[in-house]
Length: 325
Image (tube, rainbow, N blue to C red; front, side, top):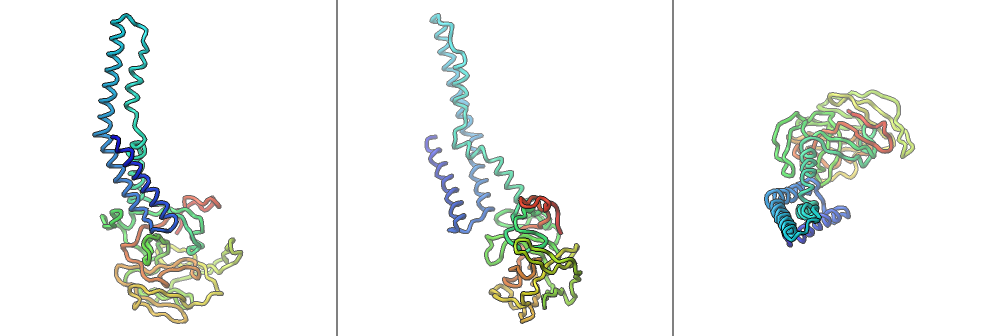
C-alpha cells in the first residue's frame, strides 16, 4: 500500500508534464489518446479499489471497531461505565476513508468514462479559431459535432463500427488536417469521390455544372471593419452563404505537395480537381481567406471526425446560439 501513493503521484505528474509539453508545443498532443489512457488508468484503479483496496479497508475498519468494542467491554468489567461510545464508530469511519491517491483516480473513473463515451460516439465540442468559415461560423463560436451521422468509429484506432450516412456536398465537416492529423479543421464539403470540382475566377462548378448562386446583401466583418460580397450558394441539400473578396486574385498561391496532386490542374484563373475515391474536396465559406483543399489537397474518409451542426455558445454574442447549415 505504501508504494501506491508514490506510483500515483508519478502517474499524475506524467499526465501533467504531457499536458504542459502539449500546451507549449514541445509535443504534438492527441486528446483522444490522452483521454483513452486516462480511462484505462483510472479504470484499473477503480477495479483495484472495488476488489482489493475497499475490502482491505473494510476489514481494517471492522478490526478497529472490534478492538474498540473489546476495550469498552474490558472497561465495563472494571466498573468504568462512562465511556465515549462514539470512539468505535469514529475508528471504523477513519479506516473506511478513501485515500487521496484513490480519490484522484478511481473516484474520477465514472466521470472520465462518461466523457470518453460521449465524445467518442455522440457529440464532441469544438471552438472555431479562425474566420475561414465566415459567414456561417464566426471566430469564437463553440460548436457541437455529431459523431454518429457518418457511422460510429472506435476511438484512437478509427476502425469503423457502423456504416452510417454518406458524406454529402454542402455538409460542414470537422476532420483531421491531412498534413498534420493532430490538428482538427472545419470546412464545407464541395466535392465527393468521383466529382470534378473547379473553382475558376471565383465560380464553383461540380461535374461541369455551375453551383447556383444568388446575390444577397453584403456581409459586414466587424473585426476588419469591411464589407464583403455575399452570395447564397446551393451546393448540397441545403443552401448556405459564402463571401467573396474582390480585391484578392483568383489564382491559388503557395500550393503544397500532397497525395493525388496529379488530379489537379492549377492556372492563373484557379484550380480544377478530380476527387479520388475515398476522399473529399473541402472549401471554406470565406472563399478568399481559407486554407483548404485548394492548397493542401483531399481529405481521406478516415480523417472525417463528424458533422458540425450546432453553435451551443458564443460568449461575445449569445444570438449565435442555434443550428446552422
